[in-house]
Image (cartoon, rainbow, N blue to C red):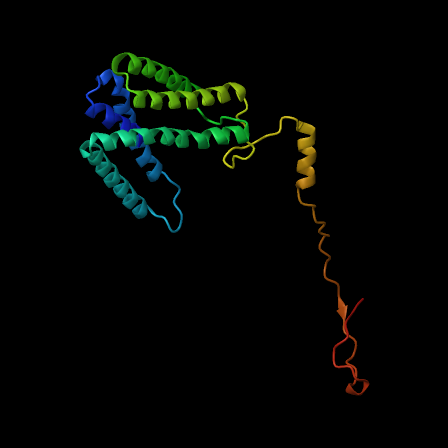
Length: 225
């Protein structure tokens, strides 16, 4: 949304394409990424592919309507929306920054992507200041640069600490656990074997005579020779 607003704002103000061209391609990329997130979302018993297809259609319609609205609303309203890109940028990065801080790890975050974003924001601040001088656009790139610098600092601080113990999809092995202790653990964790005695051959059984009913016994008495 933030990329789309900045793209529409720059295009309708007739800024040079060199100052907002990357927003066009980033907006298109994020449209595809959003559809892929919805399509590959985990399905449950209550959420089937039919529901996923309906969600993709709804999101596509919403994006198309948003694009038409950004191209037709007044420039004053578009300027107000451009201001909202500042909190949108903050809210889009804060969950990742918070998760990195809590787990003391950046997980699968790409260092190349973060460094490229920092360099891109620096270049965009320079071109915006020299070619158009728009304070709203410059403020958006400045906030994005600050957030990307925080991510870059986390990459540097937590480099090599990518083993997140709270990640349910990753197998974690304690390097301090030696082979001997592993063998001991396996032997202790294995079920205790049950002793099964060898089968005893059947013995000849003798049946004593049936007792009388007067004695109160109602069963046959059997005895092993």
